[in-house]
Amino acid sequence: MPENTHNSSAAGDVKRTGKVSKRRIEHFVAPLSETPLQAVDTVNQTSEPLSFWAEAWRNLRKQPLFIISVAMIVLVVLVAAVPQLFASADPRYCLLEDAGAGPRDGHPFGFTAQGCDIYARVIYGAKASVLVGLFTTIGVVIIGGTFGALAGYYGGWMDAILARLGDIFFALPLILGAIVIMQLPALRDSRSVWTVIMVLIIFGWPQIARITRGAVIEAKGADYVMAARSLGVSKFGALVRHVLPNSLAPIIVVASISLGTYIVAEATLSFLGIGLPSSVMSWGNDISAAQTHVRSDPQMLFWPALGLSITVLSFIMLGDALRDALDPKSRKA
Image (cartoon, rainbow, N blue to C red; front, side):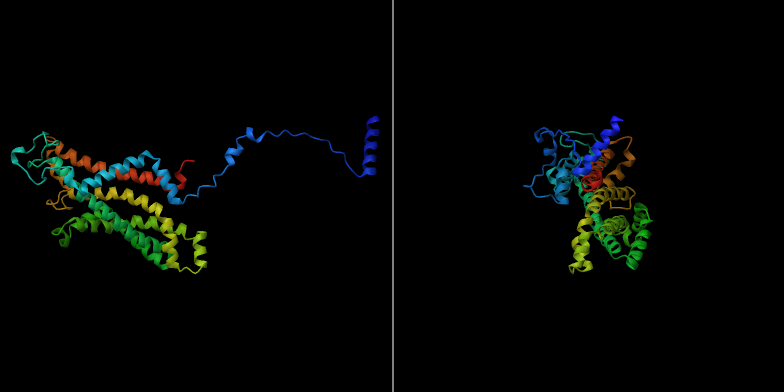
């Protein structure tokens, strides 16, 4: 009974005053200086925001893999461009009395079966291999990138035709297709560095075309493309000025890795005797000439194979570093 009387009295007070008494609750607020939120939420407003490529370059500079691969590639390019700085001996000067001889002063790698300096041939042989890989990659990116960009951006009948054309060439293996083409009478007797480059471009462009097509399809629906179109930019202008520059990241990664693949392809064709002519010094020709002396004189095969492996490895490492820097999904937080 006393409890009911108290409740009735409180209800009567509410009706008379029209107010409800609130109980004061004290809250504890920690001082701002004792919390890390101030440092976390602080934004440096003095520095300008980095673009996509500037941020990628900042990430690349912190990767040891990128630094090592670039150093190796620079060394290989220097060797290919100015081989006389690294080898004083004439790679075409051979003495039969030195045939199969081991290393000695001035000839650290020994001699071939014809008495040629192996070290000089390895140094001078880098030029043909690097030329084939570099210009094949440039040609593949130009042709495959153009076809892939047009197919992905315009779609429709153009996408159907270019995609089916790419599927036809993509179904043919690179080495097998190159072997067939190099055996044609028109090319069999006129083989050169540019012949090998042309054949590798014919069978290498579909991969870049597929990568470019997918990147363009993903980028063409972005807001900045629609904004450019609404401001009066033509479809081709939007493709060249906005879509392609924002689709280059996967193309660069695939191209850097493919460059090493084309160097291996040239060496394979030369090893089979249908690539570069024997008069052209290359790692593939030297490996082919040394295959019959593997057991008796393994240094003839080891050193050109090592030069080939280091070059291919450097470009593969560069591709991995570029992929980690240019792919937002693979970046570490």
